[in-house]
Image (cartoon, rainbow, N blue to C red):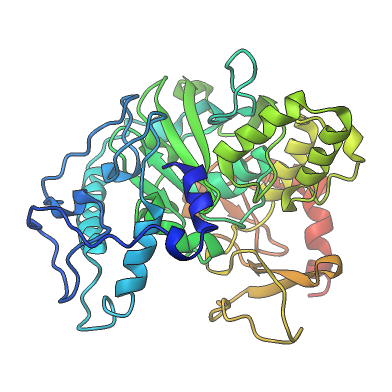
Length: 450
């Protein structure tokens, strides 16, 4: 997709706005069914094929993105027409799922693709890959230095048996310094284009889900080991459906079983994470190019722009000490420890900023809370609003968690803290060490009150 073109288009008015497409592919749909009044305008041609036999085509780099339903641009990123998607949604949003119970044609197609992938995964023999440690290198795409090398990257060791959703929430977000539970995301198996993402997510950017593949499999049901098979394999991570931050994750090493202990370790890295809501990879690439040639005064202004973003509210230092090319492994480890020692994020109550007319008004995004969940509000008086998120104080499902001390995914072998009963550990030794270093401050007051 031409991001600059879309951004400029959204600022147009009147006769300058591109007209709504009224054409559809000449072929008849081989599987999906349309309601009266819908001729498939604005829908990718792929959806006129038969999903039961559909074979996705790789892009110019040999990788398959977003189920293979979109064409590719030169960067091997899927190319979609966001304006026509918007027109199509507006034209038929009161028809599908509301009249006669028929789902959107796109959803009909995607359900079949998801079922095919589920079946394939159910028969997959991982050959103990899920019990082995791996070293991965994560880098933000399209952000290169003068030598063409990634400008922002991290190298991490962890278990391939960690659930994808836990990896995103408790490892990837803190290691990179994205805000936990703020935006939606997807992981893509680049071998076949299958997409995984957060179930029940309600972040604001979920409105753009059609632009990132229409639908996905729940990432808390599958492991990292389901995304690769050997050293050198890569899989994709997209963060924020609106801004679209593109990452690629490479498998650099797979340890034998006897050398695998499951602990999460940050090994190395470079570059500061971009600021949240800074318009995505392509726009930030231009931002950095301008930064590199700016005067000192202009560079300080750009640093302030980054530090005003949600993921740098706790930076605590003057802009002059902010270096876009630095990586503070100490701070990254602090964020990692905090994330591992907390319950999983609640995807049905993702973090959002609200500017209410009435401070006591009910937030319509808040659904029915489950046992142990509560709504947390943090006021930002300078911005005349508050941050709101649903949090949980109950323990995670063992199958969807990891040791709070080391990050090892132990499944049913994980043991519960006898005090708060909200945190899980892989061993008594790790529970003792974590209590002394971290958990005593979190747990003891609640425990002593009982």
